[in-house]
Image: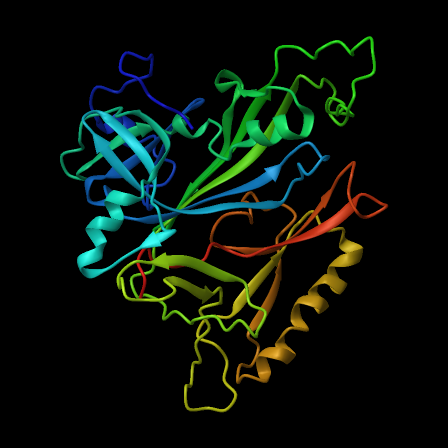
Length: 371
């Protein structure tokens, strides 16, 4: 988490001149991106303040041992931007406890949201766009909480080195803004080994980095707009094995059990609702990562398409599609709009070869209140 304190040094933009507009890498986007040299800014429309969106973090690169692997899914958070004076806050909404009607205010007062990051507003409002800039560097912090995980694994205090962290790639469209960050973690020194064997085993420092005091981790930060049309939820049945979204519904204080369980599912809709077998309006598309060795790609594609047999039993034809990410692609399939099958390697892994594949689904679309 990054906490901005008034008086902290920052690269402020006193206004929003046309020269800065020409630096926008994309003129459109949920939160358009402006970039100059190593500096990156996000444009926040006034209309998007206090408006929930989905914020996700995926791990694109890591150190290859002790559970720190590349191509892993991270947290999915319902978040919103809040402006307090000249400070912008990225706030995680508390969706573990929800309420409607008369219980909504009591629920909001009882269960706090969390601050993920904060920083100074970097410009005045643009007169036509009704938007202002914020320094995207507020994301170059330990939002994923890796410093705690590193300390648990190695018993060493690793911290974020903001000065040597940076953004590799950025892109934005109408529903999604994505920033690929390289975050540098470091510890000042590795303690000398004890002269006497400790009573309990002590983990060794990292073994897969050239210098165990320093490592880079890649994070893919996604800001995704919520769908305009809400998806109808489906309650879970404990007799069936579904992954679920669980929360406490405090709308009715007479419920014996306020816990609610919704299943995680795809938004799959028939083109022809009356047909016994119909193609979907939008198929489930899995992108095969360009890191998958070519000799395995046909087998991976066949495995993906095998799922169509199951979907045909519930009335969907060609519900699942497999596509290959081009080898020269300059976009990351770890953004929140792509489901992907990714290939990664590691020093320590269950596979004797140290090679594995991960399945990553795009961020789910759900609402911060019960339906």
